[in-house]
Structure formats: C-alpha cells, structure tokens
Image 1 (cartoon, rainbow, N blue to C red):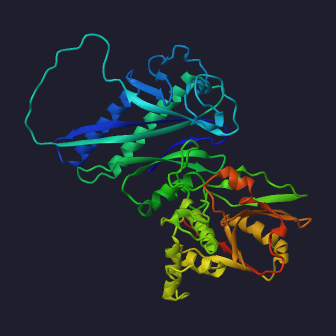
Image 2 (cartoon, one colour):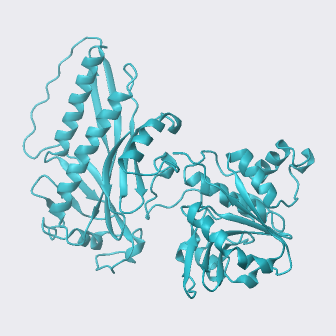
Image 3 (cartoon, one colour):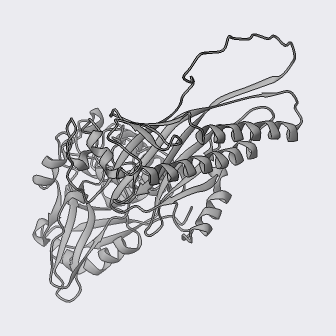
Length: 472
C-alpha cells in the first residue's frame, strides 16, 4: 500500500485514465529472488509500453483519440498539442458531465464552479503499419509456471484552465509510470509462492490543502491487516490518528458516478444556509445516506421514523470507515434490543416505536459506538442548547437523532449566534414517503432549515449524540 499521487480538490477538471494492462510472465524457477527479477522485468516492459508510440488515450463518449508519445497527435484533426485541455469537453457527447450542462453534439460548455471529470481509456496498439512478417512457430517442452493477470490501472490528475493537451499528457504518462512502480512494489511485497495478489487502486480525498491522493492496496488483504501502512500514511500526510482516512470504504466517489444502492447522499448540500446576526453554521462532517419511510420494501409509515434516523446515523459511520457492517434493517435493530435485554423476544417483527435511548443501545451493541444523551424537558428549551449542538457538530460531526413524543427526526447541523442566541436547525425528516427525488425533498422541506417553532414547545425531547471512535 503506497501513496501514489496528490492532487488539488477544488474547482477544475480531473482527468482519469483507466484500463487494464496485461501482466504476463513465465517463471522457470521457484527461487524467490529469480521470480522477483522476472516479475520486475515484466513491469519494466509495461512501463516501456506506456512510454512507447503504441500507447493510446481514448476520451470516453467522444471521438477523441490521443497518441501521447507521437508528438501528441490526435483525432479529430482540430486538436493539437497546444489545444487547451478544457476544450476536450466540447467533444464529449454525453450528459454524464452534468456540471457542464451538456446533452449532445459539439458545442461550447458553460463554466462550472464544481469539479468535473473527463474519463479516458488506456489502450495499446497491437499492429504496425506496413507489410507483416510471415509467422514463425516454435515448440519448446519444459516445465514452468505462467503468471497472467490484468492490472487495473486507475490514474487521476487535476488540471488547471491554462494547461494544454501536451502538458496533461506528460503528467498522465508520469503518473502512469509511477503507478506501475507502486503496483510492482505491492505485488512483490505480498506475493505468496507463485501466486500474486492483484494490486488495487483507490483514491482518497483528504482535507485541504492536501486534496486527492492515490493509494495501491493488495486485493484480498482486509483493512484490519493494513493498519501499520495506514499509520504510515497518516504520518506522511500529517493527519490525526483519531479518524479513518485510508480505509477502502473512504475511497473518493467521483461526481460522475452514481451510487449503486439508490440512496441519496447528503441532500443538505444543495441548500442555502440561513443568515443570522453574528451567526455561524455548524454541519455534519462527511457522507451519510438519507433513510426514510417506505424504503427497502418496508412499510413502516407511522412507526419507523426512529429506525430510519438510526439507519442514517449508521450509514454515516459506515461511509466514514468507522465500521464495516452494513446498515441494519428494522429486524436487525429489534433483535439487537432483544439481545441487550431491553426488549422481549416478541418485539422482533413488531411495529413498536423506539426512542433515543434505544438508538443509543443499538449503536453501542451493533457498531461499538457510544453516545451522549441530551435531555430537554420541553421544546421551548431547545434553543438554549445551541452551544452544545454547535460544539457537537464541530468536534464529532455525526448526525443527531432527536425524539419527542411519537416523532423522531435527524439533526444535521445548526446555525447559531452566540451573541443573540438565534438558532436554526438543519432537519432531515425520516417521515418522507416518496421517491429519491432530491428536488422534491429539498423544495418541500423534507431536508431543510427549521426555526425553533418546528418543535412542540411543551413536549419533552431526548437527543442521541453519537461519538466518533478514535481509530484509523
């Protein structure tokens, strides 16, 4: 597992090159040093191929083909080595690049304030122009061990608006070559006999100004066995050792890739923050999934709001890499409460409500996560908790479950003024029953900023504030 490349993560364009490179070599000896020498030689051959005229970059969903080692020649002919990299966007014939508002055809794109991605595919020319030589066949009988695998190349670079095609091709080739060096190290380090563990590539977005970095892991080796390497990376990038950054689940999700599970992530990001006199905004830190009524083929309308809030909290711990287990189902949650002695066996499969205390117990039992409980005797007292909530989001950054009466909600942040005491709450409402429609959810307030009047002024409330484990 080795650091490969560091990129800024602010506005601009990410060029991402992917494609398999075939690693094939014949091992005539089981001597470790000789096997390593043969494998290293094969990797050197692959690096030579990347630097050869046979190397090709094709821009996905476009007619653009680039030969980076042939004086940066390209198709279409209008593209020259001095063409600005950002002009490639006009050739991409897909609406995948959403931040450029493009549907189809060749036309100028609007500027964007967000990172966009241009995907390229790495290929190798197999034939050369000119007459072909007659084939020569030879047959040799000997015992040997043949290794063959596809190396999953995945390189990214961040480009600036004034970089040319020639500039970015030079950087891409350098990054590709470096990634092959790191793949070689990981392959040799984790080789078992004559068996290879395929190196895997992961990109991680670190706090600014570090940005996007790339790490190579050996496939099949669990995160639990890579803690030493993760500590080295934390030291290399001067990161605290109280939260995970380099577990596989922390891998950066590129903006042009849909989530496969269908859940919305972080719907609050499209909202405008409220403005308060001398106020500051304190928000959930990281990524969570929005869980609400009627998902997962479960009709929990009218009784499952706290279960859904708990699922949202569990998704945060999963997607930040603190836990590896999946988000628990309603049955999992009920069984956990039975296992800890909080409920009778008949509770499993029922439609009974749960509250903040039960949420605390389940987080501890299933995830090993501890929580603080904040008791509020009536809703009119919630504004006085602004400092405590602001401090929670500043230091812990986890979603907060709040239960009162028969209702449960998720608090994702607060806007709070220390001088005036004004406060607004960012609420994620689990009572939503519709489809995963971001616009409907935000326009109709299912995820939105609420004032103190949102709470029942006379009802009691318990808040469950999950605490981050100190792990890497």
